[in-house]
Amino acid sequence: MKFTAEHEALRKTVRDFVEKEINPHCDEWEEAGEFPIHDIFKKLGNLGLLGIQKPEEYGGMGLDYSYNLVAAEELGTAHCGGVPLAIGVQTDMCTPAISRFGSDELKRTFLAPAIAGDMVGCIGVSEVAAGSDVAGMKTTAKQDGDDYVINGSKMWITNSPKADFICLLANTSDDKPHKNKSLIVVPMNTPGISFSPHLNKLGMRSSETAQIFFDDVRVPQRYRIGAEGTGS
Image (tube, rainbow, N blue to C red; front, side, top):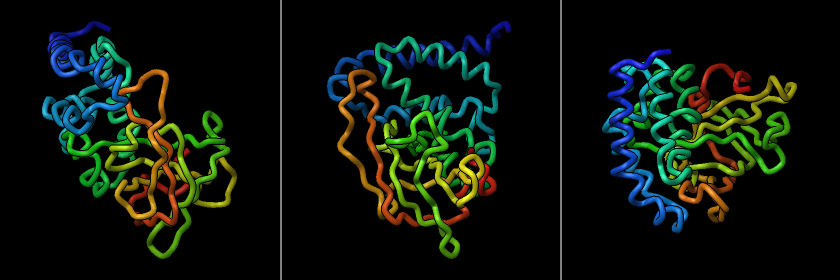
């Protein structure tokens, strides 16, 4: 494809942001094992960079994925990998399913604030015994009235220590492992959620990572993304 003047204008915006807001601090953030994620994400949101491909109705730019590609290329010029990783989790892992399949309530409650940089998200799929083998995951979300009650844990979850919500994959029935999984948005301040100490990683240190535990965590079933059993 051929990049247009609009692509190049976006490229410059991202490049300038990286050079001004990220690169001068990379060594400090890598040493600390964290960065001021809410502050950086709010600045990104103010520039529209957390919703490049997301619907305009919810604060996004409504552009095609080629613009995301340009932004990703320029984020790759950062002097560390952890901050771009954290941004990518927000834009390309925890929000796309909400954007494509979520209800209007979910989009207004979680997607719009994520695009604006007012909320930080993470995605919960991997577990200690189910990393690449997602079919082996054990976390459950059982119906109780109009709610789900969630029990289990998730491992290696980027952004989780400071996240405002998680897009969680859980088993919602006893059906076959490729048919029983649903995605549920869970606010991280819900009672019953706890964390391990931050994982002391060899690389990507500025992105915070932890294990999350769910002990009878109760969320409304309307926080499910799409139909039950379509999460996989």
